[in-house]
Image 1: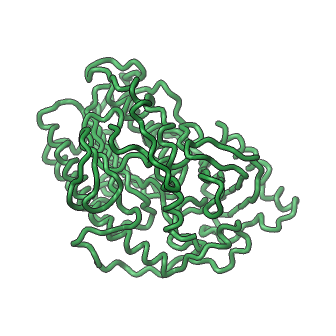
Image 2 (image 1 turned 120 degrees about the horizontal axis):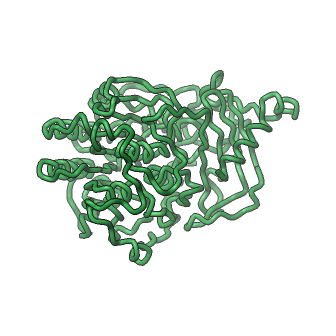
Image 3 (image 1 turned 90 degrees about the vertical axis):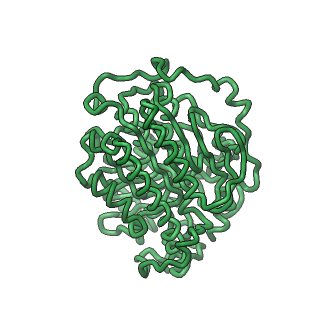
Length: 476
């Protein structure tokens, strides 16, 4: 499957974006900045009690896989050198709108309802991290991409200040605080400057703040800033999964994939060049926080909204259960909260953990349930549910699947299920294909141990127990 066909599929197959005006009409009113939240309790204990309520800077990049640190030396020097590097970071659905909805809600896509890029309206806006923070007195801002299928003219709920990007790299359309307009220039730099203006207001506005910063990099078409066009990048000669010539043990859509090493090399180089501008922006944020005296008590989280395959198993997109698609760079820094020492954390963590972490740091207890757990706690999961829904019944693309992902094994099931543009699920639910990988011995997922396996071999692999646990996770 080509990247272009994948982009076409996730762009709602030409469907017009859903208008939110009517849906949001009853939710427009918000509590005064100093009011006690009605839906979220401000706790008097926890990490925030010792440090005071932190500012929060949440940076979410687009389609950024792991192994892209070369383009982010300043980001890594700050957030890894003076923070925490999560070595086993994931997204729970490798697609933009479902992943970002998980960031906002702390929930899996099967619980928040945004199962595909067309279903952004399904997100419960009353239980997002931005809603809780605004109710608790935070100044809130959004700068960059929001949710796919969101109508540009509709203001994003619970953000006091915003510059919402209609995805693109140069001379794009924006909704700036309610006014739709074209702003000329490179969008990553516009996002940077709008964010810096928002941070500057902290000099006179004493409220803690939350900035959600979401550059379009490194999403296709991966247009670099002019000064970085053609920048040489380090050579990369693939990995064992690129392109994996023998895919006879893989599902049909992967057996038919045509991505090559050259394709992966080109995508990687283009992604790295777009991320160089992100690195400049992150450095500017750090410099501004330092000048404001707010560097120590700002909780910074940096994460990709999903990974991307560089020709792995012939695939040059996201949407698949293989590691390059759902593993992402993941950093956190908060010196005043004890996360400033430059440490490595090997726990299995995910985008569903971001909202619980932010609310924990701010001393807020959410009223709505969350599937994730605060990264400030000692909680450690033994596996993670990762899931994906196919939108539409047409041929091509990844079928609906769910996966049990642990450190040493991964078990995946594909289903006879599809979703429509509203995220509604239909189909028999029959399991159509299964995969099992020994990640300890086969980290590149080359040998599907369920291919032609006997019942006794499946039993020895523990498949019945894994299947039962996966079934439970899918409805939890």
